[in-house]
Image 1 (cartoon, helix red, strand yellow):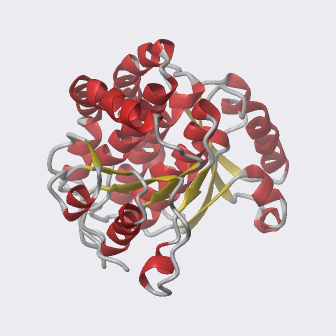
Image 2 (cartoon, one colour; image 1 turned 180 degrees about the vertical axis):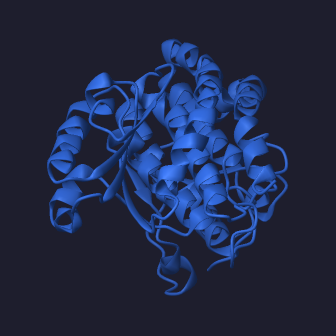
Amino acid sequence: MAGEYLAREIGEQPEILAGLLDAERAHAEEIAAALRGRDLAVVVIAARGTSDNAARYAQYLFGAVNRLPVALATPSLFTLYAAPPDLRRALVIGVSQSGESPDILAVLAEGRRQGAPTLAITNVPESPLGEAAEFVLPLHAGVERSVAATKTYTAQLLALAMLGAAFARDDARWRELTGAPRVVEAALTLDGEIAQRAERYRYADRLMTSGRGYCYGTAFELALKLKETSYLLAEPYSPPDFLHGPVAIVDDGFPALLVAPSGAAFDDMLAFARTLHERGAELIAISDRDELLDLAQTPLRLPQPLPEWLSPLAAIVPGQLLALHLARSKGLDPDRPRGLSKVTLTR
């Protein structure tokens, strides 16, 4: 069946997350302890594609949990312009599934040359990225055959969350982390419902996605999955950015996918959903809250809640399933998207 690898790897996520927690908790705490004595003023993260969306999550995670400002690296400053910024008081993190992309490697190599601590989060610890970094946090996700990354993405989110808890020395957050695999498993029960609902969007060719706070990066990852599997023109926005101009494109039936779990960002997402609803948008909602789900033509209820700081782990799962089933409904094979390969090397 089309999308066999993608379907299998979406389903593997609870087991992989549980294994990552068991295998790397002590290691994450060791890394945090080693970094705690360093004079760190900022975290700089280099990543591309799906990994870049995990980095967007880290901006909120390390900012809110650890009070560290987070910047996304600009690799062309390192590879094209030979004008890297001063990284001496930065923790430089490279996030990459394969650990092979030259631009991510260049950022870590320069950080290490300047004497900054460097950390690789990768599924292949023996990769060039892993060898270049001072510290390595492996994902233990196993071989990922689907071009569209799923299990490595949630493993990256969890690895970052583990680092945040370890830096904070917060036992309560570790207890919350242990519940994440179970909640992700519960989200997988939406598979049958989403397979049926995906038919509604078989002829869609455009869509916007939106999330705020911890789930801002989720909106980007949802858009990416829909682009690479179903060839939709899917664009991600935060509500404020969309309201500052792009809202003019909304007309009757305009599809908008909102990810809005409970938390500090929910009220803003609900107000945004009401604005879109009033303009006639076709709402697809991923949430655990009736107020928002009741506005949607396609409500996708998260079966179990997670604390907001961990909610992206479960909130992405319905989007992954939607990408899978929408591609199938369009007669496409999401395991073989046109023009893409599993490892992309950029500079």
